[in-house]
Length: 429
Image 1 (spheres, helix red, strand yellow):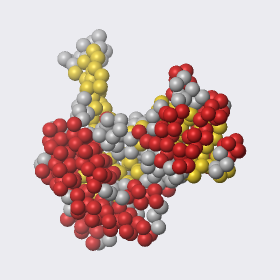
Image 2 (tube, rainbow, N blue to C red; image 1 turned 90 degrees about the horizontal axis):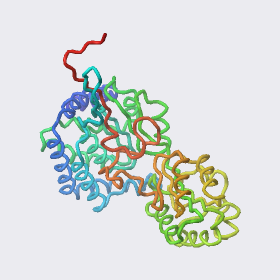
Image 3 (cartoon, rainbow, N blue to C red; image 1 turned 180 degrees about the horizontal axis):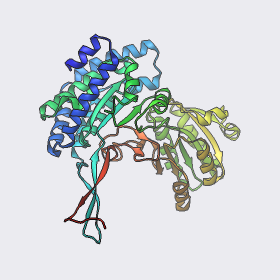
Image 4 (cartoon, rainbow, N blue to C red; image 1 turned 60 degrees about the horizontal axis):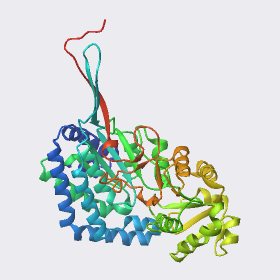
């Protein structure tokens, strides 16, 4: 850390970040070959440290929350920033869940023999050094650090200024876990400056020392990363998620799933932003579902037909179909069956998460086959779009691209692979 401190005192962000990159690359080599037991010991020790440091973390978070309120952060961002006893317990549980996962490093994905006697294996390998840039979500510190460690990678974490104190308090617990397991502290580093120039240095790859960038934040951050990064990016631009209620849907399921999809936590990327209702069941399903949403405090913005059936709705504009509210607001429209839903989602979706509520198997299979989004659900809330809920322990983010990682990015998605070929003296004629 002395190298980093010296760079900070000199005000040289470029040298600061270069030093962090070099140290991360050196640590990555050690982590790539660390035993599964040692990594798991570190994860368990990290979880223990989070629990033991609960009050210190809450105190740090209180400073960030006060500053965030004063600076005018939205309710959605404040919700993401806030830590509670339960959320700290969830972070610790997430680290323990990651420890319980099979170690992906050196897993043989496939193996086969060639007629010439060569034995070929495709084997999982770490990516190397992963840079994570995030805003408002201090829990990402633990999730990202734990996932990178389990998958044999080093991590460089750059939290936003709004979560500065919280992130540092959580990182201190991760450092204790690494130390307890005899692993290098540089395996999980936190950028010790809020200077935005540090982000630019990470996007340039720190002289080849960052292998992948993962942004977690608002549209402006993700757009900047996608536009400027010179290394691969795992990201989604926004979570414009849809729920479609088919004519075959059970009303009780439609109400419960839609209500949870929108209102459980409105500030998360898996929160539903648009509700599509089959015109064929509008007479029986539309008003009861909207009554439940409205009673829970949700503002309804509806198409003309929706406003006629539900006078409390506000007339929607075309802008509503492309808006990620991250607030208790939902856009509602009637469509002509599953084909109408597919057409609407195909035009407006951000390819994050979509749900169908239906009992008609053919409608469900058509929805699954024709919608090109990372996560598709049947009769289940869009808020299950989460690595922890998928059994991954946690996630480093949701990826909506089509290369390598898609959906929740967990330990397997944080690996690549190589081919290991074993012979007995074969030469190629």
